[in-house]
Image 1 (tube, rainbow, N blue to C red):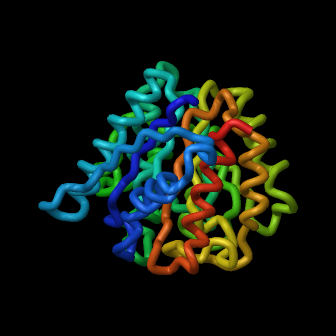
Image 2: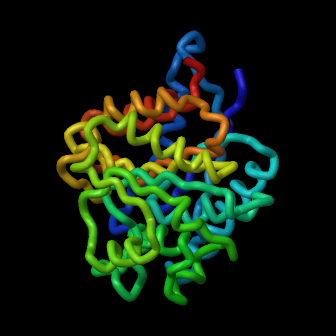
Length: 287
């Protein structure tokens, strides 16, 4: 059984709540409770904590740099990986590191499954929460304050980014993405997630050597995933997301999977926690 390298980000610095940093530890414990004959994956966990001192922005800068060092190394070694946030601001470190590790960063594609666009900057964000800004940074559209938190000189080309499941956003971030030419598949355009995800993989595969998948758990309908920071109604059914990931199980071009925004204080009967475990198995466990 191959080892899956996993990094847990024990941080909620980019969001409004305070317990989402426990996601990786809770998920690690959930996997450890399996009996040996039930295990479909062997995961090697590492946990990353933010610095205890300094301003929030300084701590996020250092945290994203540390995250990027892991994903840069795994990318150079061609090792598939799992990142478990924390809030979604960790995506700056995750995919910035991948870009740093690629010999041809212009051939990197990113599929972003999220109820939100996450393309605000400090100038446009109504809340100032940095978990709503990583897409702007990854596209190289950040303001100076946000750009300082992004650990790479390289960016994701707009034509190599696809957002799926969006249903809650500000007009300023929509305008940023529209002007950049980023493809957005809104939630109300989805009639079955599997063909949408496969189409995105096929499209990016034409021009990209490596593809990442970043999942904010709020892309799932709150009925199926109540334990998230910023829930939005009318989302994708958990069964659809599981089926879609199963169909692209261990896709050779997908370098890594990122899950974020699990908030245990909002979960009901560990419903969202168990969904996270199932999503990881759907994509990485052998059928």
